[in-house]
Image (cartoon, rainbow, N blue to C red; front, side, top):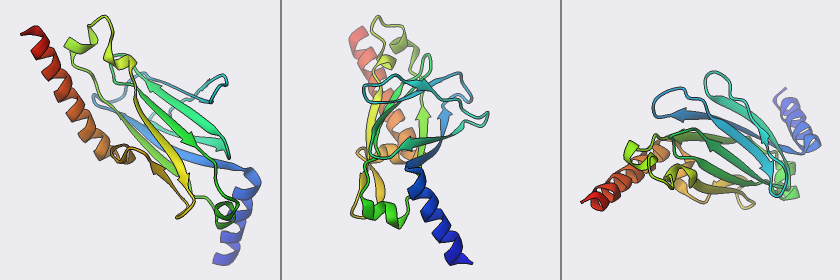
Length: 169
């Protein structure tokens, strides 16, 4: 029975030619209105709708490069570039979904009121397929977990507040 189920999964994944991206977006102050767009590099972007609990599921075609942009007013935006180029060997072994949890943090008021708001400059990370162990790798390890992103958010916010204090002194 286990062999039959596993074989069906492999056949389905190979026949569909896509990678599933499962994830959730968590904001520092709880649920927020946000915009998520996804598109192939150089092509028109389409919006993604989150479920009420902040989760999403998208399917990305194999052997393509995609950009996922996440933004909400007053929050640091994020740009995630995903390259789904995988080897035939990895396809035959079976692809597991990519899990992408994203944490958006609210910028200090002193920063968001400036003429050139920092929240227009996204935190960027890239994810690509590693054919050696058949997994997706984050170029920025802090982006790989929600806890890592929360730690990064604290560091960035502390740095921004320090910059504002120095500028105003």
